[in-house]
Image (cartoon, rainbow over all chains, first blue to last red; front, side):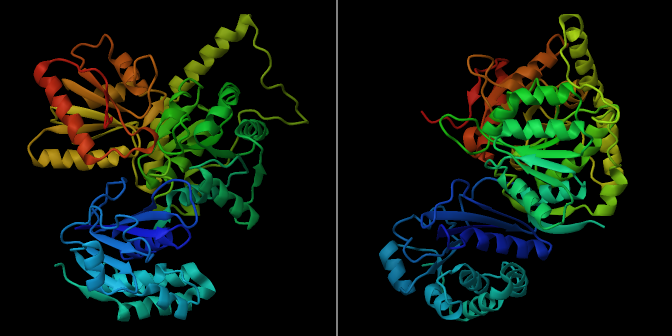
Length: 185
Length: 391
């Protein structure tokens, strides 16, 4: 099956990078994958989307993801501001960076899908020293759904982040422990 | 050995130019071509590519520099998009008339206004008649492969003409995808050193581009027409040579599940991939639909097109551009012109889709196939359709 992943973030938070790292890790595993930004001018701080597709079969679609099987929300302020679960499949998964509990998020925004939550700001602040949550959120993703092997992501983190790789890998690993996931209601 | 890697197509294209040992890159950055030129600039600055990188103040200057360096015998590359291509326009004619084998990437994008930086084919369609070889790619792999091939074809002494390698802006240029990256030894085996037919040399001075008085201008134009038309055979041959070395075969016109089709749809560029998915879905429901993918635009591959169409009764043609106040779609116009006077030619239904970055989805293709079946049933050709137009 083909997974279609939408990343919601704000310009400068690394949503595009996380989509790319996921696709590259999948390609390294011999899968087909694509990643691409929501094309257009780049504006720091503005809500942005990035997309990835991962499949065991050849992918022949370059259009924006409309019915994601996975949604990652990198910024806690986006739910309510952006319709983050737009088009999310009934059997889909959404993971949100938030200090709120799953019950609170469901109550506030009416989310029905399988839902994961992690305080990625806290993890990133404590481990990386900056509130850039993209690598932390990838940790939550691989914990909730075996899209790619964690070691494939770590290999790409090492290559991408150089001397900052160790901290990003530590945040990626801690997120795998701290992400809480609840089935659809 | 080739290596399968995940890479953004623009970066891969720049790496391919590096594998071809370009001597000169002269370019001005414009979205969505930017990453190609940025990466080449880094390659030159870091010493990975022994080339002169000429930053210029406009695309008009970029193409002028390219003409100068190519005339001096340097393997020359540039890249552009949209308004940048438009600004090069008058120099494009000079490059072809002087038979300068420049290779240019065009990351296709709409032309303003309203201001739009997204993908369609409006930029390249107005350059139809500039005398360049023009080819279209469907994905990152093709963009890499046909960039390497472009140097070989352009520098073939039978051709010695400039070439545009077109690929869709953003949906190809900015896509991270898996592809097989050729290695230096393979490129070396395929691409001999550049031996210009003639070149500017202070020890053996010649004039290039003198005045063409009325007595010889018609003959000069006839030579250009002859050369570009006759480039067809070298194109097919060198694509065959490419397949021998790299094991990937490209043809001027490709089909997809077209053999027993009741209706065919013609695409150019990356939307062909989504169209294949749409074809598979319709075929699964028992509808005999197929695709014709036009890769070579100039010289126009008449015979390949006729072979691909066979005796199909209905053909849809998708344009990514509008010819205002005229025949609507430039590609459809071309295809209809090619079919004029042929016995049993198909009904041609015109579609314009994906203007200024609007996605062309599987559902859109579905509706186009519906329109083709309706034309087949009624025997009537509808007015040109703007796909997805909001009322």
